[in-house]
Each structure stands twice: as structure tokens, then as C-alpha cells.
Image (cartoon, rainbow, N blue to C red; front, side, top):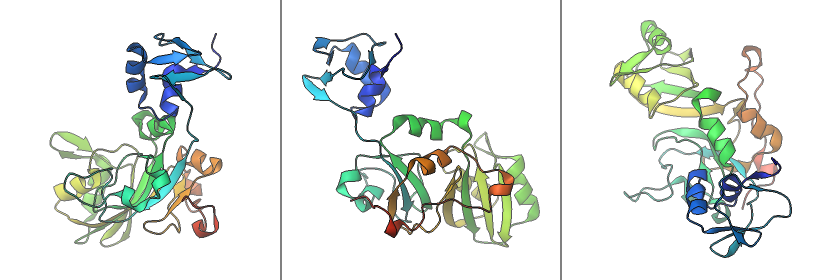
Length: 255
């Protein structure tokens, strides 16, 4: 019978932990389904079933997907061992349980997604989905055309080939960079390898959702249409027609 969702996915949607962590909870005998201990990993939970963990009933959290404009100077972590300010310091208490999807380093800024939807997080991060992320990058000096070509052809750093999907020069020192696969600090590493220093890095788009008018430190809940746009890369002709969280001050804001 394939009705319902797998037990580990159900537990993960309750905020218990990752699916792998939930598998361990099931195997250890800490989970009950309809009043009976359940160690069957293939168990599916349907409407009317009730689940307990360590004797306490659990239920799925309401799915929340947040677009957040990360400001420069904040790190993407809940607690920082160096005592630096984190993005969670800027969020309402009610939203601090959300997980950030990917990272922007401390000196970078722009569009960041936070959510309790584990499936969405995995899809946005999985290399097979090739979700585009677009950045505006300013360097300390003018770019040479030959170096712009290298961004597309690939640059080797520590034995790893890093490349951009697309590049567009916007001014002598400013370019648009599109990635569909990303390594840690990839853009900064690519620039440094070619002798440039990044002075500003702003992420303006994920999939077909643009940062738009969302101001630094500001956040807004996404609707179903906007969530779907995250997984859709824009066609070449549609990139001039930007879809972004409009007028966030007039929408229902998280608090």
C-alpha cells in the first residue's frame, strides 16, 4: 500500500531532524505509530494516523519558505564560535527554527532562502537540478577580456575546475556571474586565482526569483507561485522580465 508518506519524511516535517536522523530514531525503537512501537522503515503515515516520539505526539510544522536579503557582515549559522553576528539575529524569534538553503559568506550579501521544507532544500541544492544563481560582482580593478573567457572555460584552483555558466560585463570592474553548480566561496576563489579581489558580491537571483526591492535585513514569506519560480531557470528571452517578492512592506510580514 503506497498511500501516505514515509515515516522518516513525516518525522522530518515535524522538525524532529533530517531524514537520516529520523531513520536512526525509528531503528532505535523510539517511535510509535497508532500506539504501537514501529521499527519498520517502510511504514507510511496517512490521514488519521498518529505518531509519537519518546511518548509525545508529533505533528508536521506548517511549511514556511522565506526570502531574506542577507546583509554584509553577518554569517549563515545559528551560533558563531567567534561571536560574530548571525543572520538569525535579524529574524523574528518565531522564524529562527528555519534552515538556510546554502550559504552566503560573511562579506557577501543578497538573496537567501530559509525554510523548514527539507524536500525543497534538497532540490535547490542538488547538482542534478542545476538551479541557477546570479551574482553581481565588483572587483578592485578592470577585467581583461581574456579573463572573462576563462570564467566560462574553467579555472583550476587546488586541482578543482571551477567555471561559470554565463558572464556579462556591466562596467570595467563589474560583471554578472551565473552559476548552476557551486563550490565553497567559488566566485571569490575564481577571482583571486586570476589576480582580482572582490570588493562587493551580491546575489540577485535564484532560479527565476529575483531579489528585487527587498532591502538588506528584510524578509518576506513566499507564496506558492514564488516557491515554484525558485526551481525554474529563466529562458534567455524572459530574463528581462523579473519576478521578485514585490512591495514586501505591503504584504503579510513574518513576526
